[in-house]
Length: 132
Image (cartoon, rainbow, N blue to C red; front, side):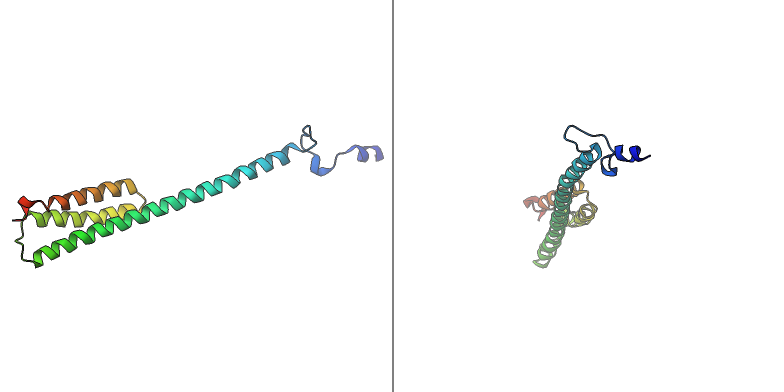
């Protein structure tokens, strides 16, 4: 009984030993910890970039809506007769709402497409043939 207790390895080195005498499980734990350390920085950067993209898209959509609504009110206040241009300005302003919502939900590509269409409609409403 005394002989068996002297031959046993300590509890911390019960895993498979490598050439340096370090246990296999310790080495794997260190590798996993090192790998996780790099991934948290990458995921933090990705989430920060995604948040910034959403905020910029929401800002651009809000500016588009305010611009279209402001131009519509300003031109009507100047006495410009209402015509087809009012519909294009109104559509441009209305498309900023779904663009803002899509950006808030993280669908920034769809938001960009939506406010690009809204901007194109507002710009088309500014053509010389539609103002009179």
